[in-house]
Structure formats: C-alpha cells, structure tokens
Image (cartoon, rainbow, N blue to C red; front, top):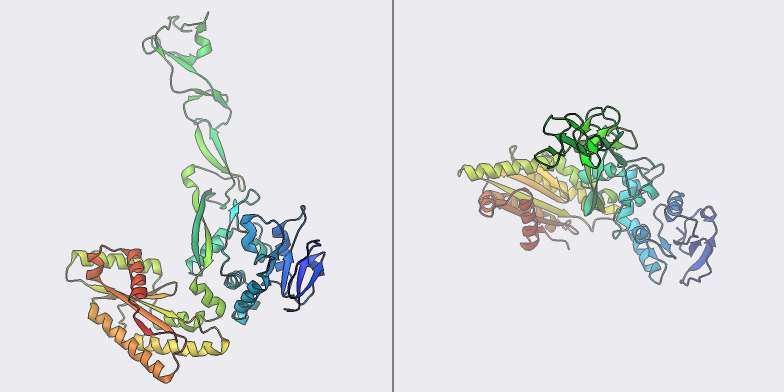
Length: 469
C-alpha cells in the first residue's frame, strides 16, 4: 500500500481535495502495481459498476483496498464501496487498514472463497452480503459482492455457499428479503407455468361452453344446440327453455383439440427453463432469501484464533451438533415435566478474546483457554453433553441441580483466579450463566427460548469468571 496518494479511476472534471496527492488513470490496467492508499471510482453511462469493481478486486494486491464512489450509485450497490468520496475518506480508509492489520497472514493471502469473503466482511463491519432479484441469473437472485470478489462465479448457486457458512456459524442471517421457488433438479429459479389437458397432457385446448340435455343426456357444445337463437337438443329435439329443469351448463368448459376431452381444470405444472424438468408445484423447493453478516466465530476464523480455543473446546469435550443438542434439551424438558424426580441443568460459557488480535499474543490466549478447559473437564462427566452456538459454549447436565452448577462455577473461578495471580489473564472475559430444569418448566421455556434466557442472564447477572482489563 502506498500512503502518498489517492487514485481516481476514469477522467473526471470534478476536483477532489484531500491532504494527499491525487493521481488518475483512464483504465484500471493503468493503476500502479503497488496499491495506493485508496481509489475513487467514476464511470460513464456505458459502464457497469459491478464489472469495474470486479476488475479492481481481481487485480493483484487490490483485494481489500478501500474503493470510494464519486457518482450516482444505485442504493442496492452502495454497500460494495467504502463510501462516497468526501471529507471522511481518509478516516474511513484508516479504519479499514487498521482491521486489515489484524487479519491472519494465512487468511489474508488465501485464494479460498470462504477466506476471501470472511476477511472482506471483517474489514468492513458495516457491509452485509446483500442480494437483489435479477433476470440475468438462472438462480434469480444475485449477490454482487460475491460476483466481485470471486473469479469465474457465473453459474454458481451462491445461496448454497452462503447457507453453508451459516450452518457453520461463520455467517448469520440479517433480514429476510424474499422467497422464491426453485427447481428440485438444478435449483434454478427460472420457471414457466404450463397448463395442459388432464387426459393427453396436450397444451392445445380452448374454452368451450357445453350444454347437458336432461331429456336424453346429450352433452355437446352450445353451437350444436342453437337453432334460430333457441336451445334445441340436437339429439332428441327437446326445447331447452329452463336451466336446471330442461338443461344445465356443466362446469367442464374446456375442450382439448388433440383428444376431444372435455374438462374443467387443466393440469398445472412448472417447467424449469434451465433443465426443462417438468414438476408439480409441490415438488418445487421454497428458498428463503436473506442478507448476511459476519458472526463472532467468523471473526475468530479471520483473526486466526479459531483454532486457539474453539477447536480446543472440541478436543476437550464430546461435541454435539447444535440442532441435535436442542432436540435432546427439549426431550429432557418433557421428561422433567412428566417425571418429577428427573432433573437437569443447562449452562452457557462465553469467552471474549477480542483484545487478543496481536499475533504475539495468540499463543498465550490458546494456553490460557486450554488451562481453563482442563479445569472444566475435571468436573464435566461422560454423560454430560457439550455443544456450541456462535461464541457460546453449552453444556447439558443430566441429574444436576443448581448446587452442581455452582461446583462447576467455583472450579472455573479457581482456575481464573490462578490466571489473575499469574498476571496472564489480561484481555480475557469469561462469563457464565445457567438454569435448572425446575426454572425452565416453571417459566414454560423450550429450546431457543432457553438459549435466549441464558444469554440474557449472562448479560444481566454479569457472572464473570475473569473480566477484561
């Protein structure tokens, strides 16, 4: 990064004033090999913001450089920039570079899509992954940030990629934006509604009003019954004067031109325009569309401290997937409600190491956490279950009352005090909250409500084993 200048891409007659030098480039290829402090991007009416940004981001060394706009940018694309080119440019760019300095070297240099996205979101905490509907994509919904960061991203279902990161707690849903129906075969959202004859499946049919003669049972189109503007049965020649007595008009009001079948409602099917598969409406898969933001766990991956204590957690305790953990918790609640003698407790442990971003302190953080887990492992039984939700570590403790939880808390406090006495706890905050089954039942809590209550107690009760200092 060169801190001497801001480069403006594309000629503009508007003068920009910064306490730095300003250079300009007609083409992105004209930019220097060594990235400048920041870029200001303008375009003409024939150019596309996304294409220009993609070209910049794929230029070596320019993946995370702050890019500002000096033009009218559509609202749904503004999150792709560091902001407008105004008096706040230098301040906002410095904040980005400050966060870039915390990224682990492995993540910073990684060509992996996951690492690139997580690192970009970390350097721009105000920037979500936002999407919009587009008829140019087979998947109907575009995420422009992913198209900009990733090479050869055309034809890729970005929704699956993002939901995979959500499943691993690296990203989280922000806002529910919309919902689309997708093909069960290729996941395309480009579908066509097809109506056809129930008998032969031909699409060649037409509206046709019928008449049913009650005298002889003949059913035929209205024109066959019309004689001198009166309805007369073409078979028995009965005058059809009164509806409901002499005749009726059946609900079947369509005629197939291929097989001659009369019917009321056509077969409705959906045809995928990408793979041409024909499916019924209930076979199509509903896909909710969200905006996404980086989670605390995702930040830990970017900073290179994911393996320092979350991985250690999995090594010290038998991990259970969170959805399974939640199901077992709900089962325990039902057992405790039905059988009064059965009891359990649930505990949440949260470790904040946000001040441990310096590379020199990461090993120290890892050692501290492993010491705590060693102490905790001594009081956690084989029958106890462990899981993880974002930055919270969860324990389900069967046949454990409040006094059993206090034993665990006391063990953690002892280990924490040893760290304090040794002067190695600086920068760590460890919080604990817990609930016994009788509290859960009396408050009629289930699953996610229990998790929410643990989170609230952790904040309100402020039961800290070690407090950040």
